[in-house]
Length: 508
Image (cartoon, rainbow, N blue to C red; front, side, top):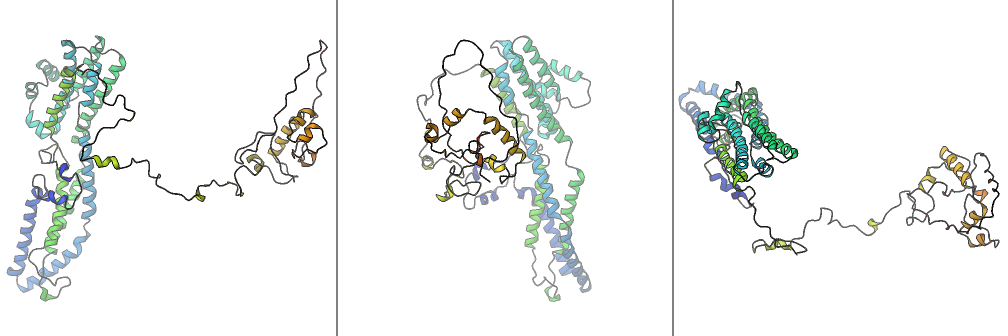
């Protein structure tokens, strides 16, 4: 029943949609031609009565009525109300199709978890999928008129092979006044648990996966039931219908052509057929007809869901998957691209031009920048290459000036005082100036605030360095091997903090 025109609009071309205007099945003409003829007939009858039946005094009164209806018909918000209503209906229509119970995922899990090539294993797999199909048939015959006409009673379901007579007895013996589409799902769960006890399902993880997929299948059946039960509120449908009908009832009078000799505004032309009013009726009334057709897609309209086709398809493929295709694999062979470093499928002559097109790397790969725009910039605003200016992030946090000592400065001063307890020899060895290390009288130019008292900031008094402990009497130890300490490291980038105790402070 579904009208498919996807192949006709596969490629956009001149007048592509115009080809669809000539289709009749599922078209707006097929839905609306009766209403359109009725509206046009009533309009022409009023026009003929105005022209040939009314007296002059009656014509003047009718002309005032026409002007009044034409002036106030625009107060009806037909576009606003109808647009929201059709949007809601189309969204609901597509969601109902997404809730159609399809067994594809369930049959793959059954084929992979319920093992056994013997008749017992086949019976388990086929019965499980038959229960799933039975649940779908029971819910579809509850919501679809086409499926109900195919299976009007449970006897027809039994004769079709979806249910055995013993199962029918158990089904009818259940004392419940509600829809019992869920009963086959319970049978499915019990049968899966029995297969697990017999070892047909080899572990609990496989059983859990099977029951989870069954719950997804059952939830879709439940959603179809709820969509059939909970409709769009009746008041909304009534408001939309009254808005459209009252608007065009006013248009029947307000869009009449009046005598141009009377000199009424916007009535200088006299035509018999209201072309643009008919187009407006075609659009608005057609919009309402679209909502009327899509509000329940389980009927027998041209664009309603083909539920009987889905039942046949689902039952056939599910039985094929769990029976004939079970453990039926082709011999493993190396694929065609086994030794290829870059596997690529061939192209036909009609698609060879696609090989000339470069692969998409990202939308920013085509952006071009000038060379000066690609240079990194310092965050502190100082000119020059990165790493030339001494200083670090922690130093910039310290207060400016030699006399101001903040909390962070006090802590760093204490750390420096502890570090100053190093021996003079190791301090001299760590200096980078050659003359200072060799004792040649060359003044050290490192500018280390730890060595030059003039560069130190005022520090809080702290206890003097403790004296080294007295040597313990005993055998004379062997002399230590002197190891030279490496010189100062290269300055770090200004955005990286230096280790505590190695900061360089600017003099006050």
